Length: 462
Image (cartoon, rainbow, N blue to C red; front, top):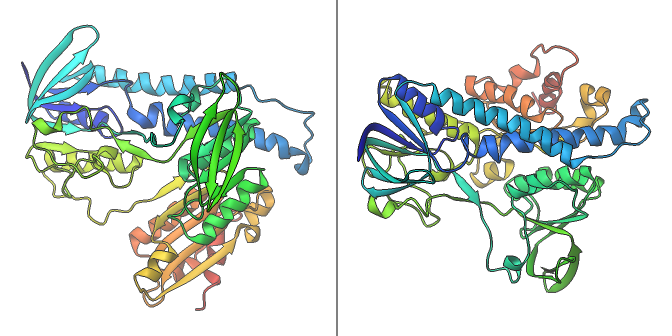
């Protein structure tokens, strides 16, 4: 059994930089990765999806260019080329991260599946060397999450369904893609493949898509997607699938008491993600998990077993790359720089990269109402934003929740072109305690999207 100072399981956006930092601090470190270096973000999440979304936006712009006085005599989508472009970018990022790790002194990289054999001992099974055992004083778990598959849906296991990972390996555009799940992942892929040329039907069990967002934001996104001929069935469930040989798939969808049969060529399951803890052997460590398998941690990201930490999606909470990376910075700075940082009250910004994108931070109007806060709501349609008018895309809206007394910004939703960038401006204001009345008269460069934050807050009484 080989002894290390630290073992990192998983090379995602927390694990990889943490392993390098620990090694640089003089700790003999092992990082174990069972699949591809870089984790979900690099290989199955942010990098590939946003690359393909960019291709889909080019197709959308080509379809709209005549409105701007630029004539294109037809265009076609080559999904093989889209995939090739995506793969090249993914491989560059994956290989770059792997090379950096392999060139880090004190850091060993091992590909294989890790499972605990004791409190701080692991066995790693590799194709080349079989099973090896390792131990360390500190263990950091960054194994991420995987798509949830609802195996209780009749007939689902008998069809060749797609996940958010496998759909990006397609080389031909689906004729009719049925998507189970009307949240962030499902909507991004739905719009993407609609722009590639697929007929899209989205099935969402809640009363509306994006049920965690405010109703007006949800409705605005619904309108935007329906303008692109995407069919949305809310308050609906797929109860059955049937497929004859390699023919069309028939989905039976139940809405209320009514059943409807929908024929499609492909099915994407996008109902959420589950932590990858089932093969870790956590029962041999004493590490506690919740009912869904997420590893329980304190505000310093340490489990109930001293010296074992969990970072990123595997621990539950907001499942975002930037949160995973922040987990790494908290753990590293606490352990190496001897700081006293925690996850308590950290900001949780996020974006949904539909087009236009949605940038969000802070509380929603619904949450403000539920908490009984004394608040005001500022709204501005993107149709009233000069930059949006000039660039020919006035879809969406700006929305901010503010404290009526202190005038501090409590929450923001920006649905529009560069929505994430505009949201980040207001996040900085929230971080710095800058009140909305100051932003209302702030001098921004003209003509920018952020300049319309003046107008957004002019909708509120002084």
